[in-house]
Amino acid sequence: MSEQRLDAGDAARELAEIDKRQVGVIDAVLVPRWYWWAVGLLIVPIGVAADSHQRTATAVIAVLIALVIAGLSVWMITGAYPRARINSATLGGAGAIYIVGFVWLVVGVSLVVAFGLQAAGIAYPGTIGTVLAAVMLIVGGPILMSRLRRSMVARAAAGSR
Amino acid sequence: MTEPRFDEVIHAPTRLAIVSLLAASRWADFKFIRDHAGLTDSALSKQLSILEDAGYVSIRKAFVGKWPRTSVSLSKEGRAAFKGHVSALQQIVASAGSSLRAG
Image (cartoon, rainbow over all chains, first blue to last red):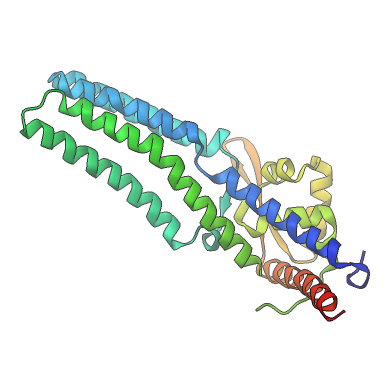
């Protein structure tokens, strides 16, 4: 069908199809919800170990968990995770800043809380700090992804125009 | 605003799906495009050849370990043609809206 024979309805359907395909790419490259749960739950044992005051055990657990998280991330990116890279115009400069900022916020808040509790002489500061980090990741991660998704969908639509 | 230019190469439904996927991506793996566009390997290869002949996509073949991997990206010309096509579609929709209002 050429342009001359294409009516407004067909053109609108074609535009809707373009949007649908672009949203499909964005949904496929966003970090899935299970990842935030996995990382959140995995970091809690580090805090529990830190509260046990057994340095060797804490170091071993921290290294093992870091390896598991790294492995999980690599597996997600190269295996289960679909193989496409979103373009920078769609992600936007703010997208990368949001992700890095969120990670730093979680690390910063949980460290400040843990050391603050320790200084105040409250029991289990490490556990409380990592549980707080886990909650922030499990709740905040999907919220961050949802906001990123919205801005990327808008950018993809604008980028096609 | 991009110059409206209806593009017959992009307009075909399967190629529209492929180009739309690639427009949001820096690059995409062959399997990713195949699965998301709902095509068979041979159908996708055929459509990619047409797009490559038109200068709209770049196809890169590499080995990851011993596994071959094909990645595809939209060329500068392909991105410009896609934008022009989208603009042409919008113009058709907009002009139909104006005709209705005028009528």
